[in-house]
Image (tube, rainbow, N blue to C red):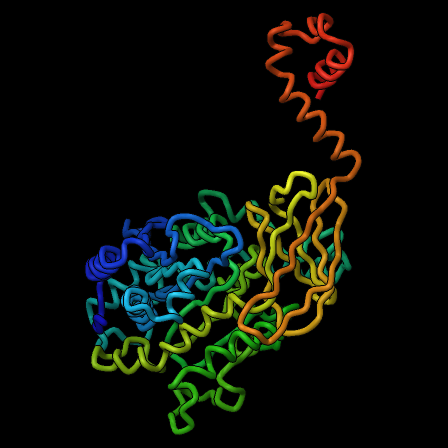
Length: 456
């Protein structure tokens, strides 16, 4: 592996090298540009790069949100090298991971900030230089605050019937061209909306701990407050998976980074119970998309020396792999139309007792992270009768398949029938004339079909 600090040019060169070494399982693409015009490159690793496969979960790692927290960037570059090499060597664990998961690695979310820190290096970069974007944005405070809208609606007993508990819309003011939103943030939001991610981790530095949502305190004036999500048990499991397999975190003899002793809580903490972060990427990801995301603080030192990078890779290698494998936890399936067998996009998947729903992707497939147990799961879609079934999640290393077939409501069925009739008779009606009255020359049943088809 290439252990060293890679500036923008070096990062591009390494990603190109990996892509050329494993062209059948990798793809490099850009999700946008930084304020200074540096492209935000992503490495996709999959057995079918460039396409979503029905039923296959999509995963992402993001690093470099704060440009001076550089270890995550190097770990993701090492990870793409490792996956390429081990796949070619026939490593069964890596082959299964690449075959069953579509992996996206964004090593530098804030490339402008990184270049600023890189120029001074690990000895002189300091605690803050390069943390912010060139424009001065802290990207982890720059996402839309959807928490407040949700909590206000909950206080008024509007959730979920009058206000959604998921896919909460972005406030219109946030989307204005003159809104105080960094181009890097806009690029990541667009990326989130374009791919059906179900699990993610955001790699930071400056501490040794894993945090999980919510990151923002519910009591707005409190700096610290335990603020769990509806999926608190799942998030605590996800955080524990990374922390318990990280060699540095489980070292009982390690020194504290600062004054917080996270070892007493298993090296995990609810983000808001550590310090409030309004507008965090984790909270936004959970409330606006289907994706569950945690933050990993990788090292006491934000800019470790090059000589430390091989050991940091060993500290994190198992954690990085094991966390990606959590895409197999819970349930997954496809919601289909019972008559046509076509997938239904945007069907709502709700789990009894958990006040947070998810939605199906464009092919009707979905993934719902759950801890082992028995669950009552309902699939509902506009124009269809909802269906509920029991789904049991086991401790096995595979998700439980929970497919649904929905029946159209009578009104929807009638609309679908007339739409099909219109499609079948469009050519014939065109031959009979461009106006419905010209259909009089057709047999009576077809006259009726054509006339009504034009009325829809």
